[in-house]
Image (cartoon, rainbow, N blue to C red; front, side, top):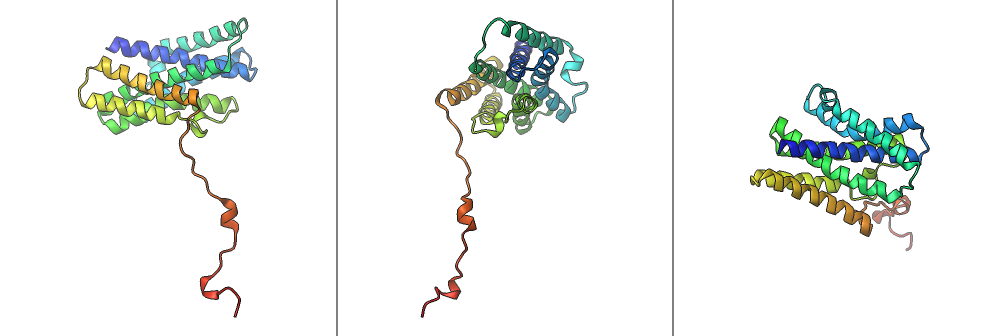
Length: 221
């Protein structure tokens, strides 16, 4: 099972590095910018997670394979994108895969350190969404989490499901697979059908209208 988690972690690193590199390409950055954006996207969420959990050194310092994989994936994306056109939806679907994988990795590491389900769920969301937030901010885009997107909520559902399945002692391979799939399905369904959460809207014009004092009457005799 540890091998499976490790492979998922590396897969998430590759996928998020690709999304960072593609975002850099859309902003016409040079090769240095591509690598930087790819690496911070792939490693940012896990870095914040480890800092919050008090894990030192953070994962990509204790195991430099993660940094190497992020750099290689970013450079490979830079080279391949010069030859083949990559549509914007590829970025969206790749990001969904990274979100699903890193949510599960974050939960697993959070639970291993604290053995508290609520904290593990928060760590799952942190791992899943922070990398994309950094990517979008550095590339001058509004982060997914602040748009009318089902993004962080998909991560929350996946992490919560994994917590429930872990609590009821379902075999880990089935629990992990189910959590990855539910996160991925929710995010992809939101992309396909343009789903969003209800919005909170305040009518400013209504607030600006003067309120009549009921004790003052209506001015007539």
